[in-house]
Image (cartoon, rainbow over the protein chains, first blue to last red):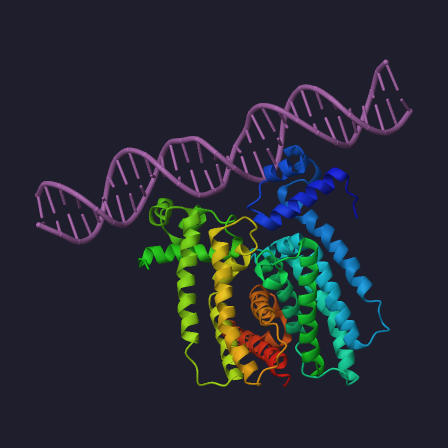
Length: 210
Length: 210
DNA sequence: GTTTAAATTAAACGTTTGTTTAACTTTGTC
DNA sequence: GACAAAGTTAAACAAACGTTTAATTTAAAC
C-alpha cells in the first residue's frame, strides 16, 4: 500500500469530510482544494481525478477495516456471548470513530449505477457477516445459542442502527439527559446507549434470556 | 394542497427515481426532462427550480405520510403487541412501497448543511416515535410490557434495518432461497423476512418472550 | 554549480450546469 | 373569430464544473 505525504493526507481528510457532509457531487474540487489549502491542480496531480480521489479514500479506509477484521478473529478464549458483545462494542467504536467515512458508505451504497465503490462496500459487509456467522453457528451447535436465528438480518439491524445513529447525532442532542454534556461526554453517552441497546437485542434473539 | 397534472406528476416521479438512484446533485434537470419527455424549461415553469422540485417531492410524500400516521391511530381494539406488530408491518409496507423516496430521505438526512428538507425528516421521525411511545408506555403501566425499554433506540433499529434492506435488495438476490423468485415474489419474500425479524426483535425486547 | 526530477502555481480549457428568454402554439372565454 | 391566459419550445445565458497546460519554484543527486 502506498504511503501518503502530509499534504496528500490533508486532501484525503478534507475530501472525506466534505463528501460526507455534502455528497460526492455536491462537493467541488475547488471546495476541497480551498479547505485543504492546496492548489486545485494538486488533486489531479496526486490522485488523477475526483473519482479516483474517492476511490483512494475507500482504499485507505478499507485497508484499515481489513486489519480491524483480522484483529477481531483472535479472541478465542471468550464465551460466545462475550465474543458477540465484544464485537458489538468494537463495531460501534470503529464506525462512530470514522463517521465521515460511514456517511460516504451510507450514500454510496444507495447508488444504483454500478460503481467500483459499491462492490467494495458489499464485499466488506460480507466479510463482517463472515466474522459473526461462525461464532453464532458454533454456539448453536454447542446448544448455547437458539437455533432459529437470521444472522444476516441481525447484522442488517446492527449496521442499520449505527448508520441511523450517526446522522441522528446532531439532532438527539435535545434529549434532556444529554442536554448538559460537552461533545466528548455526549459521544460517550451515545456509544453507551447504542451499545446497551444492541447487546440487549442480540442477547435476546440469540439466547432468549435477558 | 395543490393538485398536479399528469405532466407534473410525471416530472415528480421521474425526478424522485433519479434523485434516489444518483443523488440530487448527481442528477441534472436535463436528465429529468429527457426521461420525463418534457422540455427542460417546463421544470422551472412548474416548480420554480431544481431545489423547489425536491421540496415538492417531499411535500407530496410527506402529506401521504401524515395521512398514513393518522390512519394508524385508529386501531384501539387490539392488544398492545398486536398493535406493535401491525405497526411494524405497516411501516415495512409503506417504506418498501416508496423505496425511491426512502432513498432520498436516507441521503438527505446525512446533509450537514441546514436544509429545509432535513428538518422535515426529523419532524416526521418524531411523529412516528410519538405514535409508538404511548402504546409502549400504556402497556408498561398495565404490566404487559417490560419497564426498561429504550423506545427511541428501538425505533432507530426499526428504521435503520429497513433503510439497510432497501439498498441490499439488489444484492441479497444471490441468496440461495431467493434465487429462483421473480421480482414480485422476491419483494414478498424480503417483506416477510424483515417482518419476521423485526417482530421477533420487538417482542423479545418488550415482553421478554418468544 | 549544474542537472534532473518533483512540486507548485495561475491561467485557460472545453463541458455541463441550472435558469431565463422570447417567440410560438394551444386552450378556453366571451 | 378575437382576445387573453396558459402551455410549450429551441436557443441563449452566465456560472460552475473537472481537468489540463505551460511556466515557475523547490528539492535532490552528482
